[in-house]
Length: 262
Ligand SMILES: [Zn+2]
Ligand SMILES: [Zn+2]
Image (cartoon, rainbow, N blue to C red; front, top):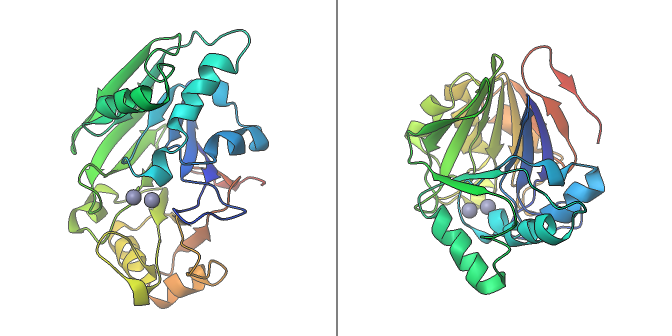
């Protein structure tokens, strides 16, 4: 299982970090997890095969996670020669199909009629689905917007967890227990803590309970110093390996671990 961070940014625009998006690859599955503003062009800049994405996974509907969804469909419909024929699965919370229809009403029918088959799968918390042979996705609870959720992907003995956006959530640590790689949002400094986002202290508490082999922090707002973040997490009581995401970071999930370039 390979993770490529496409965008590790937030609602606040940043020169070096576009909106939330990452690519999860295993076998023939190439799943884009969220598609925030800037993600489409960042994929091109990173040499990511955006044309070959097999699944679009949405953690929730906030604009910083969905802003390039319509643009990605437009690129699939009008930016490829020969045209794409490969079907696509869109997996997200209940309301995902309605979101695509609203995007189509606003932006054009490329979203709902891109020229290839689109299957929308709306999963409740507790739901699960096979992404490809041997790659299984399950859906966990978070505290954020009403539809928001976390994902856990297990493939070939490797476990990748992603919090999406969340505040402190008792049920989340159990859902994400024992990940080889836990991608966790760490949005705000503890001085600005609020119930819908994590902070260094609450991420450290999550890690203490979920005990990931590696922790990758993303979705960090500008007021939180990324250079000192790993040390801050250690100071809050999580001694495990902690990385801070940057756009283009590639990580292989599972053993042996290998950190890529970018
Ligand atoms: Zn959000
Ligand atoms: Zn967000």
